[in-house]
Image (tube, rainbow, N blue to C red):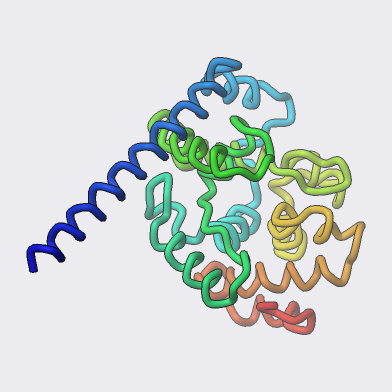
Length: 234
């Protein structure tokens, strides 16, 4: 019994040391990025763009579509959604491949405005600190604005304003369900889901967005029915 206790104690110490090391690395990585430009300055620069779209100037269909497909518990969790993270880990282990990431909208904003798109453990650790800093300084609505105004929508369109006008020649507040659900699905993989690249794949992705909107109560079954033929939920 004493031997098992010692083993348990050693494991706890190793976990604490590992956690502390990761925390130090992540904080250092984030601090290095802030030396180039502070977080508040980065945000202020984005908001100063003449095409920056405020939360209230987006079609409700679009806002709901993004929340449904990207982070349906967005308003209920903090910078990190540990439930989604655990689910993603379970799915990835079960399927033996990286299928889900579990990142929140706040984490995606941190990646878009603070770090490059490099895929590294250091970036992911720094992203956590940036996410907490974002939610300390900005409301959920403001962070949502930052996300859709910095996301890439394919075809050279950065931000919902350019995407809305580029694809549909209309203001973001005028998007209907068809247009809103299409655009909500593109940033996940712009080179694949841009309607100008592969319309069939774009519509399948759109169907997935629609299914999530119905699942979380943003639209009715009647509203979702016209999209079923594209493989809803795929």
